[in-house]
Image (cartoon, rainbow, N blue to C red; front, side, top):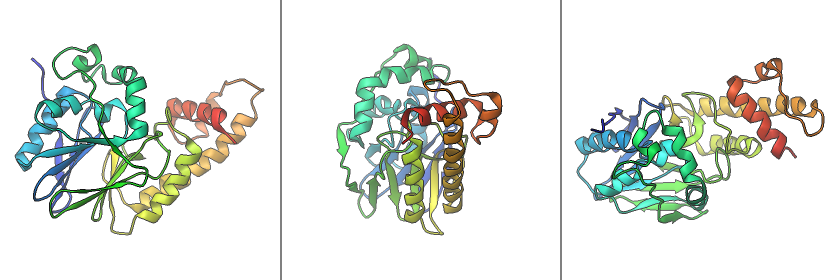
Length: 278
């Protein structure tokens, strides 16, 4: 029998909650209006989704909608469970939808240890539900009844289709902001991501509460630090890449240690710079 994985629940203000999953340290969000409630990211499969849904139902019995911040499996693979429990409206960017259509099955391996049913395509909730409601590049306002939810993108960063969700001073940033570990660069453009973090600083005030894709709640000072750290890593990384013979990719342990992201993500970071550098 499938075991539900319950998240930790933290209330951020009168209408917003952070629901923190243990497996990937991923954050889902909940915003409750008078007529309906919005779920931001549904977890990595039916186990997390079942725990998330139960936690949400202890907070509200209102009809739900879902917003996916991006297309990585740990954020969207709970969609099918929510659809099976009555949710009809799933929102995402066009780029996220394209990624799920073209590469969704590759994402299954990401969750194989935590969500074996999802990885093996077993059970009624293991198919990939692709959102049907596309958020325009100009963004969208979702009315929850007395509460307005702003859904918007700032361009390519962590992926080609990142969305942010704002309700008052609460900002759900998806994996554009990472507190629980180093930024993940596998589908990223580090150059554009760094620019985006600069714009995100401007979007945030001193009292903005930022819910990152993974880890603890942060503030604008944390975003500023991540921005400056990424700019410095790009400068260092461009010099490292320029030192290699043409066409080669062979970072040394010393070169990886010069970067702030740990050996695995630093290696991916350098590879992305080599592929994308101006």
